Image 1 (cartoon, one colour):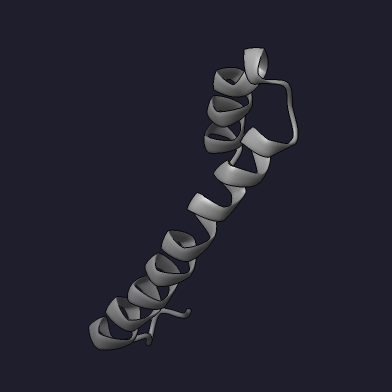
Image 2 (image 1 turned 180 degrees about the vertical axis):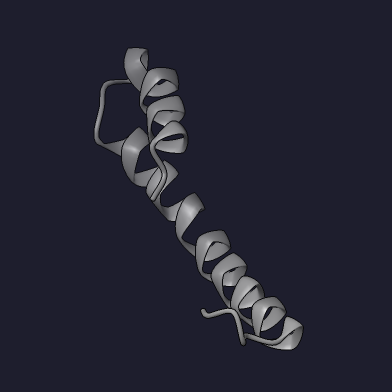
Length: 53
């Protein structure tokens, strides 16, 4: 993006980014939960959300 980027382009980029993040976050959360023992499930979930992409 530059100073000449239009508002429409910014909105379009944000929509694409939101769709991508919305699709990947549940997958990463499930993977984090599956990778650890049940006692550490909460810590793994919160760590993956805190350090998300």
